[in-house]
Image 1 (cartoon, rainbow, N blue to C red):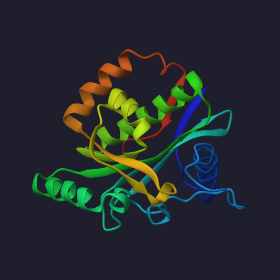
Image 2 (cartoon, rainbow, N blue to C red):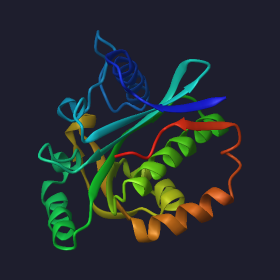
Image 3 (spheres, rainbow, N blue to C red):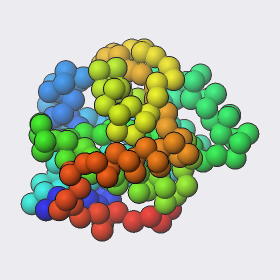
Image 4 (cartoon, helix red, strand yellow):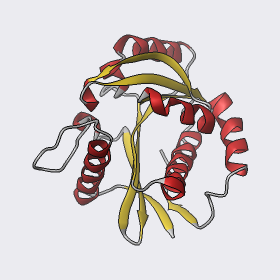
Length: 208
């Protein structure tokens, strides 16, 4: 069974860094290093604003995603898209909307296996976004992956592409979802998919 839970130890995070390194190295988004670890935005890990989701199968980490609520630490999107992120932040402040960013989504495996993990991670993230009433969420993706997130969660490109130094200068686009459109879109999408059978979401709560 594919199980999902929240990372809560240094050992958990070390596994996340190993998985991120392996996945990004395979995609040529990072260079080899002797540690075999990739820490995208270390200043965002280990803070109250960030929640790291783990997907495990038979005790093996097969996927991860991170969700960070906007705070004094800011968001990962402030790196590659500072002006655009600030504009969204100001809009959210004026409209009293809660802003967050989803990042470092990685999955081990290809084909249906990899898609099952991906859909599970998105489902867990969706559960937290709705439970915490995060009305606007930002993302950065390689342009070649933008279409799949448009289809799965109704995300839309609002800026880019630009060279993202966090992934060795690979191109990235800034994408956005809003709760008003995310909920009906994901509800329709998840009902049409069979990826959610035999998934255990009990380790991912709603408390914020």
